Length: 265
Image 1: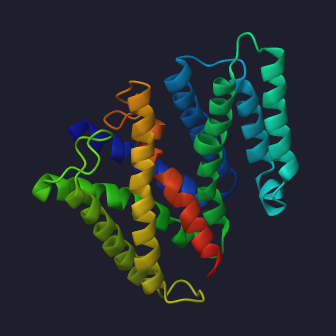
Image 2: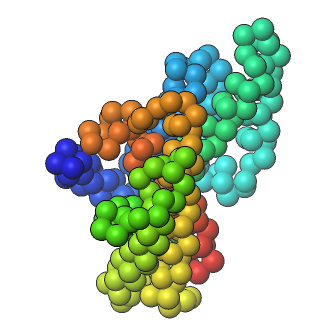
């Protein structure tokens, strides 16, 4: 726990700076996080970086370089070309690469690569410098509340085959904790923003829903670790593990918060 706290003291101020400044700095930071997350998952499955994985790295760089253009036009050409090139590689290397390898390569690109960019899109919304924090409240607020609730009163295992330490009580405590923190934060920013709905009610609902999916995101990452016999995805953040260990729930909450906000901002 001491190591986790020390890492947080170093890591989270950096996160604050990147999100506060936003723009190209945040875009570059998220690109590096996405690359690292993809690398961790690829190594989980393949134990090394394969040549075909560089197709994904190349397209991720293109994606972040032309982020607004690709998303505003929802460029199907970008997605189609990515899939076609992967299939072409499969044909050329069919004696060394299996369709399962190909499916993993494509999946990791969308999962560990693209989902992270929702943080950037949320930050770029009107009042995004205030609203983007609902992503982290829903994920890490839920995680913290679930941990302490589970430690205090947790008795009934949630899904022991995936995560033996998670309990039903912790699951519920995480939802309620994220909602409470979200509402308190909403009261703090209520006079700083002007959106089409009551921000306090919005925070309660969206943080509760996002916290639910944040725990699904955590369990999804755990299922991959269990399948690949990993304890942690990496060691880049002492006490926390890899980027995927710290951001697995963020990958689920960020898109939900972003799309929910596009309806009201």
